[in-house]
Image (cartoon, one colour):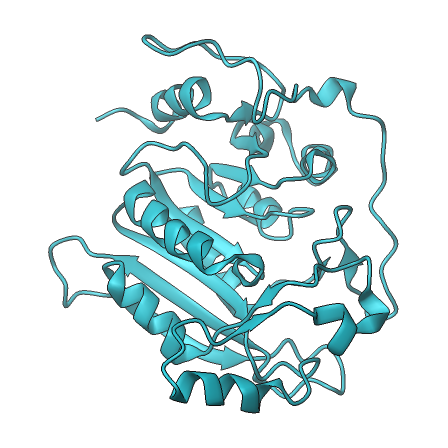
Length: 297
């Protein structure tokens, strides 16, 4: 069996990963990696010096590409991912990593992490985080491909985290993401998900619409295309207008349809403001079947 460094060298050469130090690695049978995605040169040394945006009044930090916010503290699902990543003998993927709220503590616990984000500036800030030691950076790999289309080998990852990322996906991309993660994970690997629910406090009145659609057989009842117009106008220019929320029934069906076992599934809230109702997000820990389908420890 190839060790973790051998696997990463193959993925770097074939699939668009770049080491946090910016080196290019060759692997037999693969072309030299010249760019990360869409022929855009990914050179951290050429990245203009930037700083982390100042927090909003509620402490959230806006992303630089208007794809929402990163909270400076991580939730219970992300905490589970970090703890599991520390024990994994395989690389783990932090998809939509933003400024590294999950990547950095996972590295500090000894994990090998692929930090993925479509904005190179976010990845730059992760790589420059002062908490990271030389050893940590040796286990950090960066990728700026748009999910779900990472070109990773099958049976390669120990775990995948998508925290508050999948609710920006179209139904087609949700389906493809599940198929890809099913392929990328080793047997027994875990898929950690946090998705905005229809009961989020900002979606006033939408829960009834969602439940009506669901009762009428709509496979994807959580699609919203006028987010800043109808629900959060103050965030115009900071979040997309498209949002795709889910509840437990929808998420569990997608998981089952794609061969995952459900280890953990629940509604929860961040409890960061007085408006939180404890049901704003659906969190899940899914497990790729490994032949012992009743074992989900």
